[in-house]
Image 1 (cartoon, helix red, strand yellow):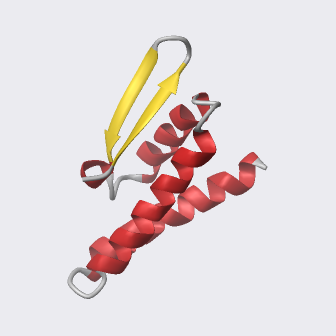
Image 2: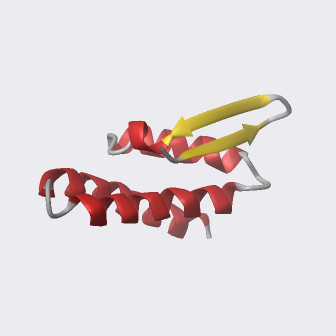
Length: 87
């Protein structure tokens, strides 16, 4: 199972297991992205890991569970929108 490690502030750390977290409600994703932005050294890399996970998982599950794949794709759209607003 994929996981991301986020370091924020001086001593804050978070590990997110992507398979357990996604798909999620949009407001939970926005909160996660806000925490990711606090990891100023690796935030772009972490967002790329999240995008890659969502794309791969949606592709894998689409033949078996279209609703699940659609929720993952909605999460992916939110990540892409968030990236556009950060530029």
